[in-house]
Length: 158
Picture 1 (spheres, rainbow, N blue to C red):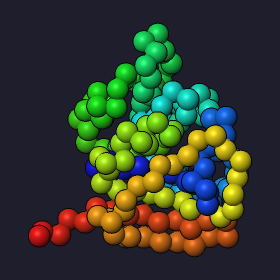
Picture 2 (tube, rainbow, N blue to C red):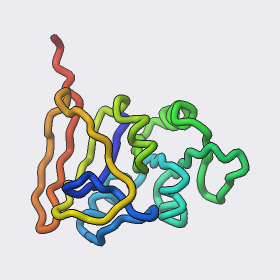
Picture 3 (cartoon, helix red, strand yellow):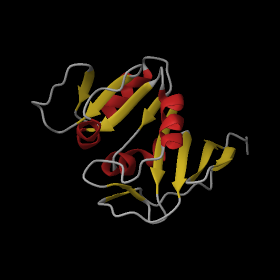
Picture 4 (cartoon, one colour):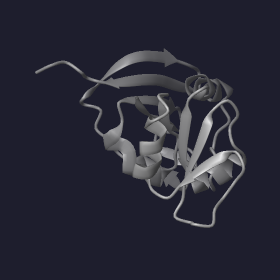
């Protein structure tokens, strides 16, 4: 399954200087629980913002920089190449950012995990406008600082 996990604010901000502009432990727990034991794919800037491979997951970094290497991560130079290899492993594949990666993969996704963060934050990267008309909400949880929703692609036969 191809999934995308994201948290964004009321202006669709997802980051500032390759970091999350908020600190919401419950949202981080949602991320950890969903991605643990699975595959995470991210752009190089997102990886550098995290600063290390995330434990308990297969970490894949996409970069155009042919010289980029980092212990504990697999490096690919295109979304297609990374996804092809990731799908061979038989685990859920999560795209975790950033903006450029989200723009490239939004149409490939079977499941969205979205945290709608309350408030407006200063940021320099945004989640693109996407249509969820072909998806249904399968889970919704309300927290003080955000609303968490999972969407799955409709599979009803026409």
